[in-house]
Length: 196
Image (cartoon, rainbow, N blue to C red; front, side, top):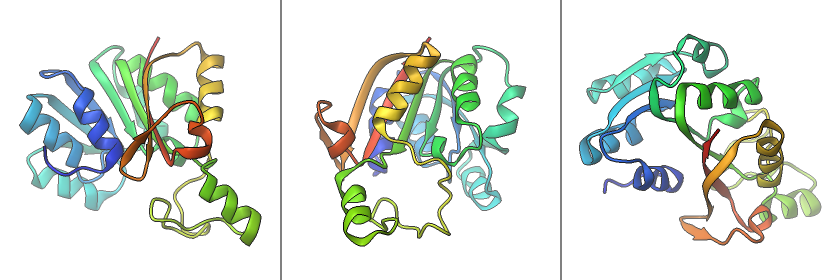
């Protein structure tokens, strides 16, 4: 498999071959290209950054410029097997609405996000008193696109409130998978496969 960011690799391994997917916040289309080329997936994308849209289109991918906060309402119900939102939920203005739209548009949804309750984040705040800058959260607080600092436990609570089913979850520390028991403390990133 082509080298992907760890959360994208998890998603790529778990999307059924031949599926129809919508990758929201698809970046340069790296995941879509792997799914198309290695799994025979019919992949479509939505991306806000025009340079990323151009990069994805240059790979021969079907990507349109748009914003998850406003443009998901235009997609018909159940038009995809999977809606994918990788490291985009925390950048959205209305995460609950985006999450509901994902599960309206797709029969199932993958959501991945950085866990702001990871022990390194907590330690940085405790000892340094400042928002952390790490390998996986490389921007300073004033440059970050993250506007909602979500934790795994926060996300699980939101899913419970919205009546959303977790079919499967993966917790990543660096490039390796970690257990779910203390994921809120030890996982840097989380990936959830969801359904209604």
